[in-house]
Image 1 (cartoon, rainbow, N blue to C red):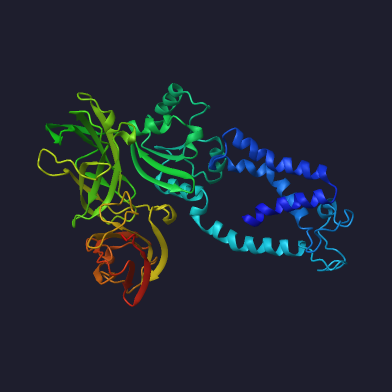
Image 2: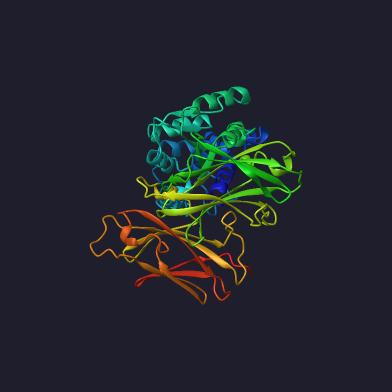
Length: 520
């Protein structure tokens, strides 16, 4: 990057020294004017950097002029006829004197071209291979194709340029672009959105450059109030969010209401059915009605968690009420706060029966409020996860570390590792003696081999601690896995302070994983 920035400056000096001040001035203005205008208009942000392409021709011309620099040529006058910018543009042939010119001065044009090839060869393959190196529209389109239904679902875009990009990958679902004007008209935008989703089951939202497209948060705020947010992940600079609409919810009043400390009462609970039944990649829906009892200066968060038979947290959603649009500091005693939460059963969740729980905690200290039953959570009932018919593309499945490492007959797609209870803040340092929660993402081979084991086991090590268990924790033995299926396992291992690097072994195959964020 430093070399790329220096080349135009060298080119300007070269043109000036050869008596071409007008050309240097014109190209300098061409290069700098777009940058200056973007700063002046407040447009110098990630969303608008693509418009710097208008300065690219000037950069190329100045870089070509910089290629005429000769070592030892500073301090003596060069012949403009021998090294003209026009001749460079008209042909790419080298001077008659091969690598050295008649003055025995090295011509840097022989260096710039192979150096450019070297940099491109080193940088571009990774750019095209890594889905996180750019906005992953292809992966999002594959997700929509795998999970969406054209008759019941909708794709929501928020920027004009997205429509052209999305059209290239379009999996065939209806598309709505909002807001349709800048600055957005709140009443018109909300009316269009409400009308568009009236008969829809699911919304796939691709939020890009919201500060410019929707600075008031009209679209997202409406969805937070009227829909259930599920999967949310960054795909490059695009925030990909899946919402479910509250169709066919059954609400039941809680008598007596459940009290959370002195802050509020939970007066009503809504779910699609009792108990809920979902597949991996689908959402459990929870509608809450809060009645504040007092004002507070503390910002409390709602956590909804899905627990397996070992009380391991399989899925968790933490947010301030109403998607963050009604923090507890704005609550007034006596009003009713309608608060919707969608809890995604993560891709790879083993089939089985899970517990759904709810808690309120202080956003700064993490301290939960005690309920009227004396516990610090409320049990909302059971959720049945059935085997999934369709799976998400692996490159859009959220995980901390991606590997794709073969371990015996299975593939370790990736893993998460963080202090237990801190899925919302995975970089939180882990003190010695605390458990580390590890999620392992496995993929079965396709087809399954004839000697596919009935229940394959692994060994996980951290310092002097070790853990041996079935790949999915025992509730879903490998003998029941489907060909190519993604399966996740949730485990805890204690950090004893003697080592920070995880290692994993399946049979005779072993792989060293990364280090945990240990407390120093």
